[in-house]
Length: 251
Image 1: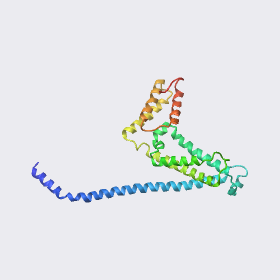
Image 2: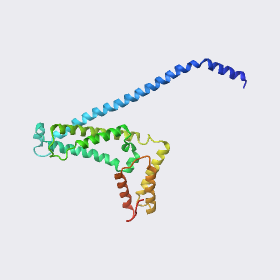
Image 3: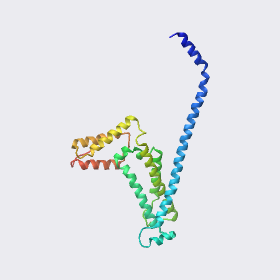
Image 4: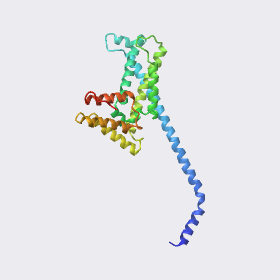
């Protein structure tokens, strides 16, 4: 091509050097708007969590005051002031235990952890919020329904269980929404392989050698991706060992 063309082209570009400043300004403004939008979304999530927690706490309190379905319950429900600590705490214990059981369905089930890894990842903000709410509820839980605790302590425990319930629901919803989207393509392939291998490890129609090799490969594929608790490993090994002959050892 004619050298004079390039000379003219670069000369024209050279005269437009000043455009870099407004372009940088636009790019910087877009970045600031994105950061602002991200903060606003985070604040909305926190506000939603707070409102849901208040509603859940009110619901728990109403259920506790309603009393059990047995003779005399209607009379007690009509007079909330007569509801004992025992009745209130028994209902809160039940709710607390139900939430924990739902969490353990993820924590101890490796297949679910592979499908919804955010539920075991404390680096995820909503999962971290749930784990903090769990710790608070666990710490405030009285030793027993007939334990001598103050009205203030019961009220604090009521709020904590309400926060615990809402935090779990929000974390679970988010984990099911994002699934494995936070992982790279290669990491997602490893998770897919682990899920497939897990089925082989638990498949009674597979040979003994196939099941044991599949179990070991599951652990290898998950290494560095998902941190399995000791309890989850124990549950998995028990399931696999149940399909293996006695005396088979994991190494």
